[in-house]
Image 1 (cartoon, rainbow, N blue to C red):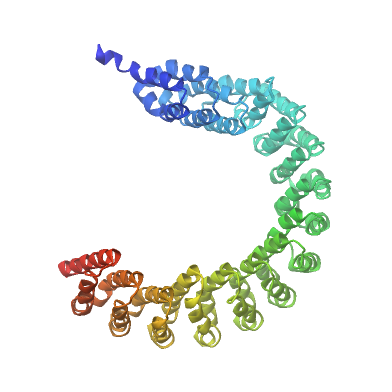
Image 2 (cartoon, helix red, strand yellow; image 1 turned 135 degrees about the horizontal axis):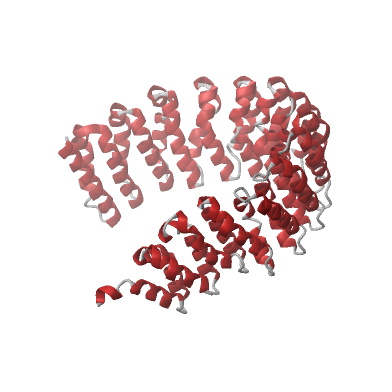
Length: 587
């Protein structure tokens, strides 16, 4: 008896938990659906579990969202692709709920299932579902249907295709703005599945309806459609149908529509070809770069390099550079920041002479900007300019500004400079580095901000790797070791960290002769934090100095620390002694 009752148990538990008042129990139950389905077997999952889920009218969005997600991967549990259609009813119900994220997840799951279904099932089950949703009374179902047409359309017979195109056209003219918005945002996906002959007629008339919508939220989604449709149409058709729309949109009364155009414009240049770009799109882009709304200028400024890649250098210098000069002193710091994040990429496009003449003054003004993010964005992309104008010019023009930033009052700016130093060092060469930047690297070890001190220690390690141990022995090690007597324990801690990072680069001899004695001397420090960090550093030095160094120097020091009054010092000394023992065993 017990054996026959057992398969009933999971569904009974599920039903009890799904009706429980505790939302967490209901959620857990939904998340275990696949386990329950496996226990039930494919047939009972189809006949009992799925119908039960279809009737389940839980009102909590979190539970419904989890259910929509689970059902998307449920095909194996209902018997494979041949039975995929049984999953459609519960998801159809979820496509009509009020909460947007639940509907979106249900549509995503339906698309995933539809992509695996047989053609006959798509025609027999999926397409009718799309039609039901598209003609639903409540706007939520019509919104959801827009995201499903591209799955239903390709395998439909001709008569059904005509019907689906007609229904989509009605959705584009729906009374509810939310439905028109969904139709606009999914038009590109649907258009990609429609035959070229209907693309020029049906789809373009839908597109024109959406571009003339009185709601700016619909028009701005139609902008995305411009780029998608532009890629599907021939160049001449694109110029005839899409180009006028984009030019109008770039002067739209809603800044949000102009913002979308600024983001998408460079994609359209490829679709319409160089001639139309020069005549129509360049003036449109210049208007956006000079827009009276800062948000539009931010979007346009952020795409300036991508746009210039499509143009010839002459066109870029003639039309775009004057706007870039204006933007570099824009009243909005966010516009300047967006420009700074991409402007360095213009150097390879314009070439050496134009970069020196046109861009360098802009770089310099942005490097001296009062807003730290603007300066940061310039610093992090300097290598792109170096490739074009060479290190001599770069160092003459930009290096004084970099040195100034190394002492910037914003620590994040100082941090960005430090992280850039090894790259600068490799580009500038050792002689130049010693003259101009060496003293800065030492200065940062005593910065007030921990992150700067930590980065400075890492920086020394990277420089030692770049210029080699001999150079480090001359220029880094003596200056680092000098600072070990700093009266403030936090700075002594930074030196310890620097030693532990430099030791693997410097090798066993220098570590034993120069670095190890300094670490040992710090084991007598009065601050417990220093002493337990000494134990940690000694542990990291064990593999470097080898067995004889461990026995002669490191172990005696650690034994002494393991008897320290401070509990943390004793703990870390114990850990380090264990590491010494392991070296002995492996040795």
